[in-house]
Image (cartoon, rainbow, N blue to C red; front, side, top):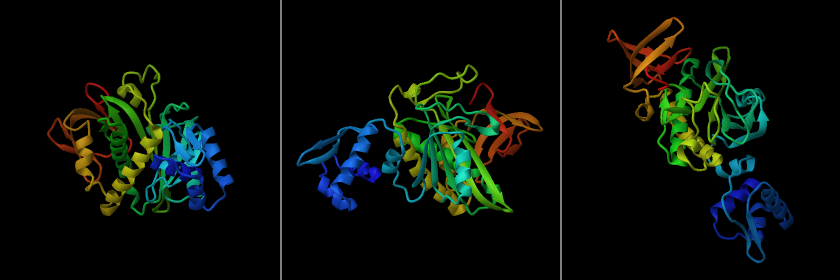
Length: 326
């Protein structure tokens, strides 16, 4: 009920009477009063005026389950939220919930991670109160060889959600990084569980640097945060709300064709690698070329020095800029 009260207070700028809330939720005035007091303790400046009711005086930067549930109004993506103050990894937690039959669209969110992970086993520093760490659980009925494209779908959704929530121009570094002004602000890690030849579940973990922070020396030149780039406060809850809305829409387009064909134009327009010289690092070796965007399978097209168009599948491959991170 807390989240629903918060949602109503946010939607109605004027006072809402206690009686209206009682009738809406079919509860007593005492139950409403208790829920409002709990919201106040969580940091919401709710005014209570006799004979007028309750009003949300301002939008505080509060981050928690009630805040997220009051904001996310999608059909399925993020409608069931598992919120934790701290977990080892939101991906690991989401996989455990998947084994307990959690529904598709379950969203695991944490204030901090003690064992956050990035692509290819790299660590992801996850301090509390600074950033946005979440994992979305999916149960797609697709062939396993198509699952890697879900990373690209999420990347596009994060880019679009970030632009809506923060009014910023973001780009995508294929396949799983979101960049601002040439520096990484977001990483995405997709993991799949198979049962025979079928997908049991897919979890997509996302880490977004939001608050100003100090990065390790080896990351200082290529990592940044939203607030460092924009010079203003960013609501993590609003950002996650927008990302879930965009993901639900983009995922529907992906599932319609079970490839990137309906998202191709939007993704390639956001691709910071496109038209640039890149270095492709594969287990068998490396080569340089010019990125030409992705195809409908999500592969990066690279024109090599011999004028051959190579199709690069994400997997264990890294793509770097010749003259820097992008």
